[in-house]
Image 1 (spheres, rainbow over the protein chains, first blue to last red):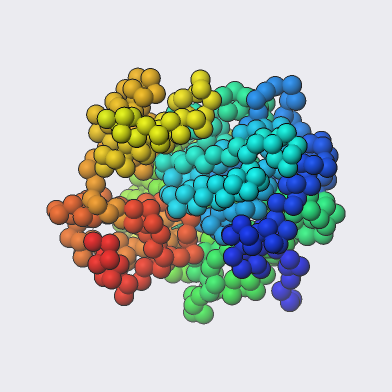
Image 2: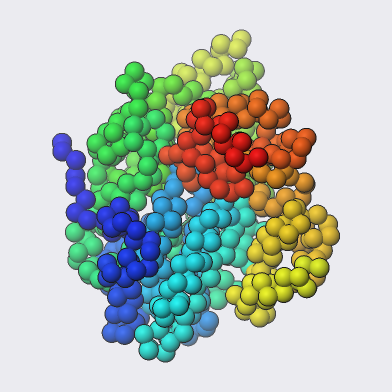
Length: 422
Length: 156
Ligand SMILES: NC(=O)C1=CN([C@@H]2O[C@H](COP(=O)(O)OP(=O)(O)OC[C@H]3O[C@@H](n4cnc5c(N)ncnc54)[C@H](O)[C@@H]3O)[C@@H](O)[C@H]2O)C=CC1
Ligand SMILES: Cc1cc2nc3c(=O)[nH]c(=O)nc-3n(C[C@H](O)[C@H](O)[C@H](O)COP(=O)(O)O)c2cc1C
Ligand code: SF4
Ligand code: FES
């Protein structure tokens, strides 16, 4: 099958237009015209309606319909906030990184339009602390746009004001979870809050707050420019549009790709990313949606990359992070590394996750070091069972993905690892 | 004193948040204090707490929670090597071993001359650039064996 062509870029337009990160280049390519159009000739309700019709779903991982989320914001409660999730920390994910560094103004324009649509006058970009450069860079870009009257007071003479501030996190994966993010933005340790209430109703400072991912908001100017029907000409009925997907590991051409949603994993890995790096080392398994997701193997290559198809197969599209590993990778080591991540990042609020991740790592570690005990695989499965569904937030559950995937697809290899030790 | 010496910058930071929500300025102020003092020891934590009218323990707890705040003294250059999946299968382990060798320290330690601190970190969102590290949060992509020496010389 020939490679599906992407008609044009929606979010990674930096691949098409050189130096689009520069304000003048962005303006010359029609930049900020959509913010002007939206603010001067559309009502907030009309913008929300167009985004709803487009079927845009949250690109941060959960795929919740963006327009629907915006419409949950209570009109009568003020102030309201827009919070941009730029915490991008899911292992394997690096697409927000490229948007921030290479196409920042489209993100900022998306923020202006979205803030106007929900009635917010302040937006915070919560960016992971490691993106120190990206944070400074965004601040510069905001200042440039501000100097031209594109961000700030009385935009386009409409009387609408919006300020955008960059707020740097300080190294904690959990702060990507939206309620932990809000706690962190309030100056506290990043521990998740109980949902509901969802942030749309009670978020930052208990005020109505929309939290959206960087890529989600970067779609918005183009939806306003070209309309919901155009947007729907990409992707599938239930997963319209494109997705910036990061691919890494043992492929020939790792990197970010903007794909029309719905192409198969096979096409993505073999046609887009050049296939396996070493012809002598075939594919062993795929972590398809970041470390949190259940693994897939060769038998799943024809799965379409959409939220629903991936969910039906028991895994997730997530934030668009495909990690491809070849037969040189020992399953025990991979599972250990994944669970080390979750152990390190557990926020410590609830015991199934705090204790459970420690336990999982301990057992994986002894198998990896050659001291595995008979019954260790059952033990891992049992600890996983005690964690699943009992953790306060999705992070804890995520740490069980590696356990269950390894057991499901590579039981003989795990048993052999232990047998070899006796 | 932090506030007196950086008044303009601190006031600008505070202005980003509602007046009755000063605590939101905690992370930015901790970054500022860390830049000025090199690490967040008791005194710097106390200063930040006073600027924001917060109990010392609240601020101390926050410093402990986040990996980019340093309680302990670190080297002039902090090398953060990602050893997460997939990097660990794409050269990160070899890079850590190489750096340990050249610097004569283990990951987690600082060289005697206080120039380098070497740490293993989790995914830094540059997985296609493995083996990858950040030196004082600046990315160094594809740090293959032949590049290590020149990189260290430049950073030193
Ligand atoms: N991008 C990254 O680095 C990472 C992404 N993830 C992704 O995060 C996902 C889980 O995220 P969650 O926020 O826990 O998912 P969720 O399903 O609870 O929420 C998704 C979004 O929809 C909103 N929402 C859902 N129901 C709502 C309602 N009834 N009213 C108002 N708003 C509502 C939430 O506020 C949130 O913004 C996972 O699927 C995973 O893929 C996880 C780790 C890292
Ligand atoms: C542990 C955890 C980490 C998360 N990290 C991120 C993240 O780094 N970036 C992100 O956009 N969403 C992340 N999310 C999802 C957010 O909670 C939230 O769903 C998202 O920001 C909503 O924006 P969207 O609707 O535009 O996707 C994370 C969720 C969990 C449970
Ligand atoms: S599941 Fe883990 S990360 Fe989530 S609240 Fe519990 S301890 Fe914290
Ligand atoms: S796993 Fe190393 S940068 Fe992502």
